[in-house]
Length: 111
Image 1 (cartoon, rainbow, N blue to C red):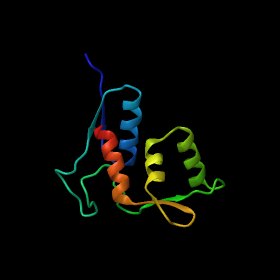
Image 2: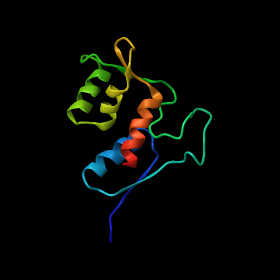
Image 3: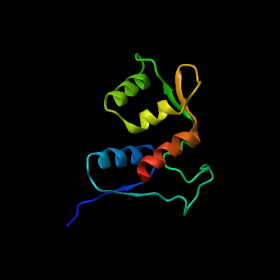
C-alpha cells in the first residue's frame, strides 16, 4: 500500500510543505479549491497566490522577519528562492511580483 500525504490548500504553507515532501521522495496529493471555487480576492488559478500584500516584510537580520528569511535560506526553502527570483524593488522589504511568484510555485508543484 502506497503511503501518500494529503495537503489541503495550495497557499504558502501548503505549497512549501508539498515541495519539501516531494523533494524528499514522499508522494503528495495537494488539494486546492481553485479554479473550481474562486474568491473575491484571488485573481489567478495559481498556487501560493499572495492576495493581501506582495510584501514578505523586512530583510534586516536584526528583525524577526529578517531572521526568518535567513532560516528559510539556510533550509533551502523553494518558496524563498522563488521570492528572491521574482523580487521587485520595495526598500527594505522583500516584495515580489505576485503573478510571477505564483507561476514559479505552480510550475514547481506541477513538475
